[in-house]
Length: 208
Image (tube, rainbow, N blue to C red; front, side, top):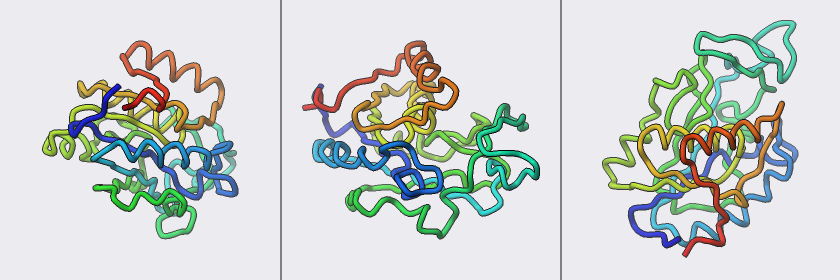
């Protein structure tokens, strides 16, 4: 598949807290860095996302006395997994992993900063209506195809890909440049949604 100037690489949440040793580490999360760096050389346009939570964020189990990590509660916008505290604004855990090194990225998009709502997707908060502004940015820049990599495949990468399709954008997930959490069958569920929505899962080696 040939990459051109209308394509954008969106690198999702490659942050210290999602890598080994972090507060919400994805298994082998740092192993996405090498593939992403190789892929990035082919793209003129790169966007990074950064989870950016206040310390008392609604999605943290610590904000719900008596609740445990990875329990599910019902929020106003639907089911909400309760996470360990992670990517708290201004902490080292929230920083982009220093080895990523994509200094030429044109935009760093912060998400999840609204205290009362979680945000997996690069395009919308979890209510599926509150926009992050990324769709408008891509439209104004004339960027038409979205290629996604990063963490985690079955959460923030997956939600972003599905929202890109919902917005009418072709979406390609670079599977070898992602790692998954796989909580309660989330990988299988995500891939089922991909198939329904027309998200293409490809290997970065197919890019030219």
